[in-house]
Structures are given as structure tokens and as C-alpha cells.
Length: 463
View 1 (tube, helix red, strand yellow):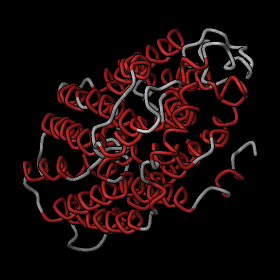
View 2 (tube, rainbow, N blue to C red):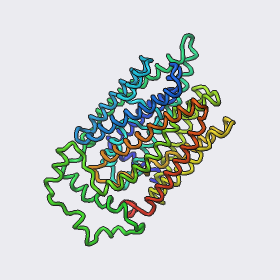
View 3 (tube, rainbow, N blue to C red):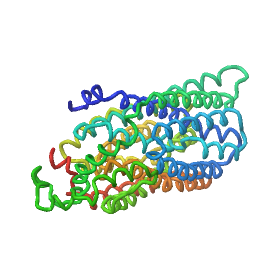
């Protein structure tokens, strides 16, 4: 139970399918991230233009993701997931066939190509909203931990296989690096089709709940949102039974409100949720800009440039770091049950920021790789607690839209980073990106601790 194994085994078929979709997607992202900068560089594209490419990709993703997640509940979550998977496959085909810079830019924007190896597109927001709906409150942190672990494991295996396959193909007589890279983008397109098939297997339970269920869930989950900003950490479970209870749950009409939400494709976010959302978006923007300065694709390029590592060794390095990260994600779920979501997010993420800032300093490969591994042990431990925290902070009918807004803010902030790093790489000042990113991430952690320390969700109060 500590690792949430029982929770994931007893979860619904749809939950398992969503986790399998994430594995497939992150496998593709991990493989493409390892070779993306190398592929563009092999085409004769300068570092500055590669940075611009990543920025334009992320900016395009902001628009696509915002539109798709905004209307996902109204148009159908499964339909949007399937549409995104199709676009992912199309982008892989274009990268496998074309070498034109602007054609690749358009394909990466309209389709789905991840410059960082992390989530891009509308998938994560929709999947997390659906998982929160499918999962009982008590098991939510466990399911999110496994959801994160499975995705990270997919990225790890993707980078490992890609690294060794690319190096093996280049050893074949007459095979150029560009040809080997294009084979992997063909595999990327195939994985998009597999993900499309998985999306089509989801049931109706993944869609926004019917009016009656949504109305009942809104009444019960409204307390979570209101309790998030309470100052009492020791509030007892009986405290919601206060005289103010009728005021919080009373509604002008118990029959018309749910039907409006069901019929409208426009999401409605309550004022209380907006306050929480605005604070978190500010913090996530800082953290994401820092992540944009050092995406995985630039990190691989940094190690090749400084230490002349072949693709196979790079793939193995990132396989190890991602596997370690996966294991520590499960530990985060157990820690959060003891010290709370906010403290877990901060106390695991802050040391990783310090390790990040130190990565470019050693001239010894072993020491630099050690810092990368140490950072990976802790860097993603905040993901599952953060997802559970956000899911408990808003109403069920708001989750998809709220998580979509959060992802858009994060992607928009991250988009500026790659261009800055590309410019620094041109000036042979690559190391500055690591130092600045580490400092910004540390600032994010301290800001999160300052804004939310002592504030609990209703679920934490009952735990």
C-alpha cells in the first residue's frame, strides 16, 4: 500500500489504458528528444536557429493545446485525445521525409514534437482530469504517482533504444546520421498510430460526468476548494459541519445549473479556483522558464559538445536517469501522505535545482554524469504531489480547463528558454543556462513554500 501497487492494480480499465497511452507517448518523446538537436544540426542548421525552432514549436503548442483542452469536455475527451494522436503521427511522417527548416517548424507546431522530452500537446491535461474523475480521492496520489512513473519509464526506454539503434544504423555502410535519425522519426509516427488505437479503446466513463453525478460531486468537492486556503493545519474532519455549511452548498437551482454545464462547451471556473490558479500559474511560469533553458535535447547536445559522447552512451545515461526518476516518484507518494503535498513538492525539488546549476562546472565526465543522476533522483518527485494538489483544489467540472490553462502557461513560459540557450551556445556560454535555470527553480520552490505552507486540502485534513 505504501507504493500504491494495490491502487493501480485495482484501478479501472480506462485508468490502465490512460497510463499505457502515456507510456507510448513518452517512449516516442524520449526517442525523438535524444536526436532532435542532432538531426537539425546534421541538416546544417545553426544553434541559434535550432533554439528558435524549439521556441516556435512550444509557442505553437500553446495555441493548439489551449484550444483543444478548452473544449475537450464539450467536444469529448476521447475525441480530442484521438485527434492529438493523429497529429503526432503526421508530424513523425513529415520529419522522416523532409529536411526543409520551415516545413519541419510547421510540422512540429501543427503536429506534436517535444523539444524537451517532457509533455507537450493537450494530452496530459485531459488525461489528468480524467484520472481524477475515475479515481477515488484516497487513491488519487497513488494513481498520479504511477501515471508519472509509467511515463518516465517510457521516456527512459525510448532514449535507450533510440541511442543504440541510431548508433547501430550508422555503422551500416552507406548510412548517414540523417538517414538513421529519419528512421527513428518513422518509428515516432508508428507510435502515434498505436496511441490513436489506445484512445479509441476508452469507454464513455472518461467523458465529463452526467449532470446528476456532477452536481453531487460539486457539492462534496466544493469543500476541498474552500479548505485549500484555510490556515489551520489541524482542522478536524468534523469542522465542515459548521453553521456556514448551508451557505456554501446552497444553489439557486439544483436542476438548471448542471444542465447548463453539460450543454455548453465553454468551461466555467469559479472565483475561488481562479485565486488558486493565478498563484500556481505565476510559480509554474518561473519553473517552466527555467526548464526551457535546459531541455533534454539541449542537455544531450551539451554532453556531445563538451565530452564527445556517442548516441548510445547518451541514451544509456538518460535511461539510467529516467529509471531512477521513476523509482523515486513512488517514494514521493508515500512521503506526501506523511508530510503533506506542499512540503513534498518543495523539499524534493529544491536539492535538484542545486544539482542542476552545478552540472556544467566539472571538467570530468564522471562527475558531471553524477550530478545529472543526482538531479534526476529528485527532479520529478514533485510531479505526482503537484497533480494531486491541483486536482483537489478545483471542482471536477473545472479540472480539464484548469489543467489545460496550467499546461498552456507552463509551455508559454518554457518557449522562451530554448532560444536563449541557443544564443548562449553560439557565444560559447552554454554553462550560463544551467546556472540561471538552477537559481530560478530554487526561487520557484521557495515561492511555493511561502504561498502555500500551512494550507491544506480537505483530503489532507482527513488524512
